[in-house]
Length: 404
Image 1 (cartoon, rainbow, N blue to C red):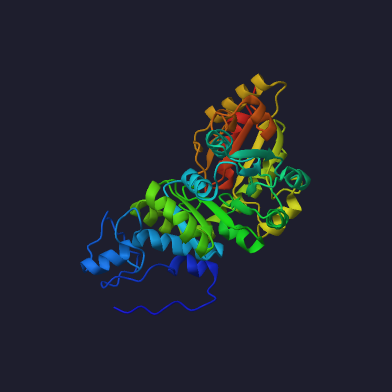
Image 2: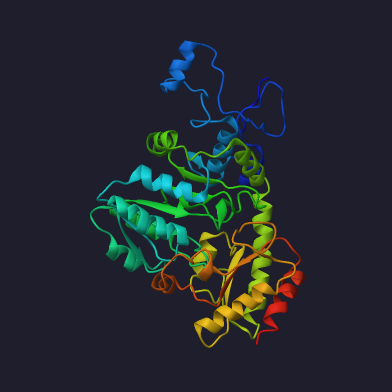
């Protein structure tokens, strides 16, 4: 069966439900799920050319799969990049980027407010192989500039950050990186391409944990890197082919279908998060709320400019407490009082998920690293889902209104 190519200049919400590899001869409307580890070759000669990279075609699950290709094509289109490379998890995509682009003696500059596992991977694991790194304040452009070295190869930012929702100026960081002969990589997990598209602001690489909003229902692990076709083909593909941190076809299919509702989910969840953040700001047992959509957020204006006028679906708040140990006890009380919402370390789900960052996502960091990142013991992160706003408030009140 023939398939008409899609017209140019389709909107992002149309691409999210339509872009994929060609249909099979059966004409399926929902994208096919190709559960196979290998592919039968039409001839020995064609097989040889495909394995040599001289001809397009699928050969083995570690080097490509049509379902995975559909996910990569769709995400690249949404992010506005030339290509994308899917991986088995968000952290494996960070690993792939660093392993593909760095060598001993190189230097990485990254935000001190990044996800805890990213900090450990760069600052500890890659340090063992001679890669130097420096952490700087997410929002201090002068600190980024001052920390650049002649051997700096990558500037790596996460915006908004997890869990304090700090926002960096992507355009300014891209200029800094490029003037230094370095690349800018941006973790776009919180905003997704629905709210912001870093490639259009100068970023060279966009990283995703597809486990989060791209899936949207907490079902599978997935990751991806979006970049130029040259970088994907020349840098990422040879490494993933040999290292094998590939995305399974089933997980790719799940996230591919999740992309179809990404636009409406992000808008609905962002609206609920904004309303909840406004409400939490007024609660007497809440010391501070971190949410880019609030005018009290230090980078509110920048966030509204970069994130399409929305604040995203993740917020955090500090419970009031006189000291760190009391703060931890108070935060645990709020979390243990939940009856509707979920105590769960993931985010991006249609179900609202809460977590205590100091003992989970940032629990493996030293206390000095946590303090530098602003992660206190009384901090609670809320990844807002699609429940009714009144039910969100009611469940939080069970804990907040009964604090000692």
